Image (cartoon, rainbow, N blue to C red; front, side, top):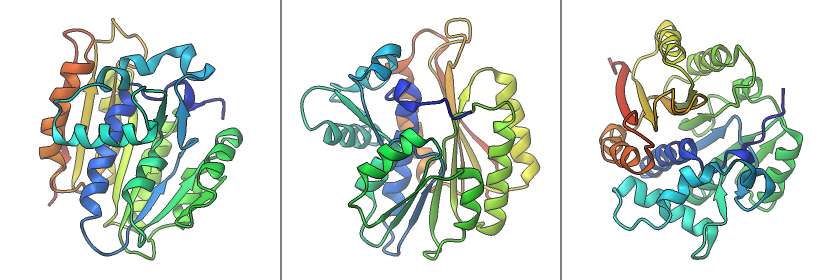
Length: 281
């Protein structure tokens, strides 16, 4: 436990999808003038050097953000995301990749608040250093599953909770779903986003059953597969479960996900899915 470092995987295809969805949601939710609370239960380091030993060792960014870096013609949700990644790099060359806390820092406003939780000591130190002068960011070296329960409902009465675990433990899927269920009972109007790796279709089917067991309404499932399981025997895709999504999210993903399949797909097994796991009412 706590051996996972996201620096090894920064900028891979899963990060691309996750952050296209996240930026789309944040853009929509900040249209309303009232304050918003953003809670990141597994915040990581907040940003990553793609030329570091961690990232160079796996080279996963070459199958993710590097494929999109110089793209000019992209759907609006992808163009918005790419513009932010370019701001993080501040130059023509792709040398770094922002984490979810950085995207939130760029898109949230003075009336909004960020709660960033990270248990890994090394990543927490990097996270805290990155946002030490940001009065809107509150960093906590805690277990995100447990600590988040005391954060909802937020005083703002509006919230986006991102849960992006490492899935190091065998029962972590169950823990993530159970935690979301608990948070939702305390704060039913919040928007919840769970990222997960697609390692086999049985796990995805099991995850759906677990969410159905919670009895929560308005659950949208998004998935991106860049290959078939034989080509990539590890993680060949990723998914995001969104509870109480922005009403525009489906339409935005109908533009973004086919583009990501065409650009990031490795073979004919590449595909996307947009599914309503539970109706709004």
